[in-house]
Image (cartoon, rainbow, N blue to C red; front, side):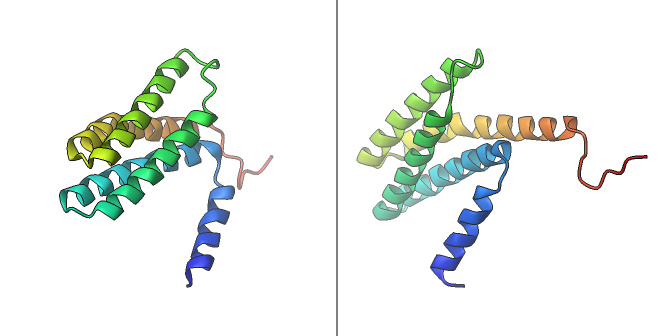
Length: 135
C-alpha cells in the first residue's frame, strides 16, 4: 500500500470515528509522540525528536481549540494543563531535554488513563442500538 493510500485510509477512518473515541485516540497519540521524542533525544536522533514533538504540539493545540472550558467545572483546569504542556514541549524541543519531555509524559499518561476509563463508562451506559430488535 503506498503512502497516499495509507494516509487516505487513516484519514477516512478518523473522519467516521465517534468524538469520544477520537479524543482518546488523540491523547494516546500524544503520549506515543512524547515517548518517541524522549527516546529519540536519548539516542541523539534530533530530527525524529523535533518531528514528534512538533506533532505532539499540534495535538495539544487541537485539543485546546476543541475545549469549551465554560461547559464544565474542570474546563479551566484542563485549559491550564494544555497551556503548560505546550510551553514545556516547546522548551523541550529547543533544549532537546529528556527531563522536560518526561515531565510532559507524567502529565499526559494519567489523562490518557482517565479518558480511556471515561470512554468505557460512557459506552457501557449507552443502550445497545445495533442489532436490537423490537418485540
